[in-house]
Image (cartoon, rainbow, N blue to C red; front, side, top):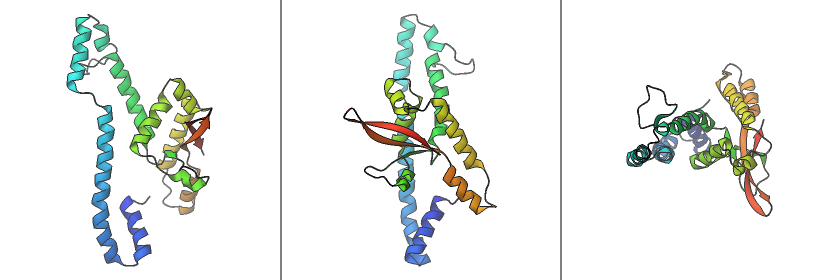
Length: 205
């Protein structure tokens, strides 16, 4: 697998045929990409946070109402409080959901396109957060989004995707290309249902 820098450099050298120009443009592009990735990472982490003030306010309210069982139910003894049972279950779910953010697993079709190559459009982190919430959700919206697929089907597709990713095929480039094409992934597109555009997922591969 090539790194982002290597892929961009090879693309530039094919275009400009001049190593000095490639070095010049890479010196501009690398900081821009780093800033973009850092901003996406910052947005992702901020979406998970609540302030310490909000957390203590909730704990104080539960204590005032003498609902102590909701303050620390089912939390491991080594876990620092304030951390209630719901927060612990959510953290476990979060740790499991992180695997869905692997590059290449969640994709979306470009609008107004029927070209299969457009399956390769990678989602932004905002889109991935929204998609993973729908995949793991229990609401009617989540059920409609998953369509005929169960959460177990999606989890198995993810496990197969990870297996393909972790298989070392460096010794056989042809096998590597074939496995890359057979690697399963989730595609999300919008379909018109009862007059409204609704997001629907499908598993490819």
